[in-house]
Length: 215
Image (cartoon, rainbow, N blue to C red; front, side, top):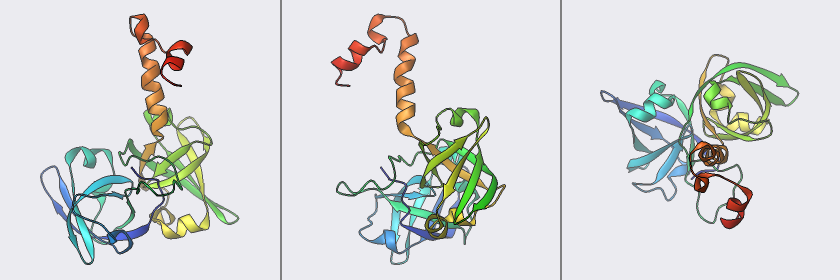
């Protein structure tokens, strides 16, 4: 589990590609503290498992499914990446609940300055937008952000100067692809409500059902 608060920007040192997979070697410093083989690191919002560890970085494997659903397949040596270690049990939730499981890829439609802030408008598929709500949370390339506006085929967020400066989002421009993870709570609520349409009263989510289950 992650929070969407990027700890540092690392750099891709090497990419070893297989037929339908890849291994990323990433240079880093801050996230290496206490990092062990088998630990999880979010790379541009994608949860990866550390398979090798050295003084200057780490290596992680990327499977076929992850390449299909994210932008990691486009990384090359020299690409900057947002990095966050899995949250410690005694840590603070500075962002929101982030699983590191990307829901899909969006495209930056436009950026604009608004005094000290920078607005990013991101186009996304209807299947993703259904879970994105105004004033709710969304993760873009591993960065926890508050949704400022939602339209038919896009949504907008506003970045403070600090976020733009310490993450790769500050380098993104119109036309760039970004990893998106929507708020996991909305997906679970939808799944629960789907049982309303299933036969049998035991599958209906009613007020009594919620009370009996501690809600």
